[in-house]
Length: 84
Image (cartoon, rainbow, N blue to C red; front, side):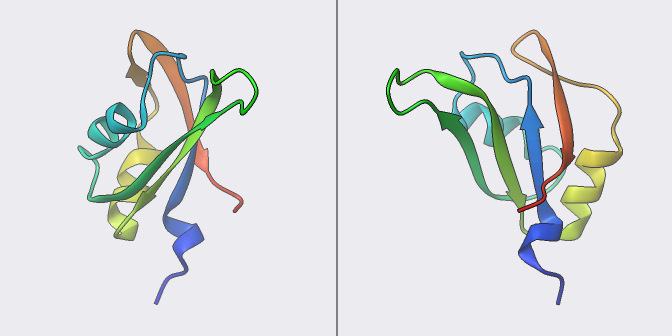
């Protein structure tokens, strides 16, 4: 069984307007998303501009990482394998 970290991606350059729900909806086109997280600054409550997405199956992870360009809320976002 593949480890969960292999199916997790890091998403960078997120616009501050993107919510966890929008992140989940966008990446659902690549496979079933088990969780999506946008990281917020605890002091300001503002998005830190990055997050993580976990896929139920490796297929979703592969589909998302093999696509070169991702655009969400008008911004080109960065997608790469997560180290954790």
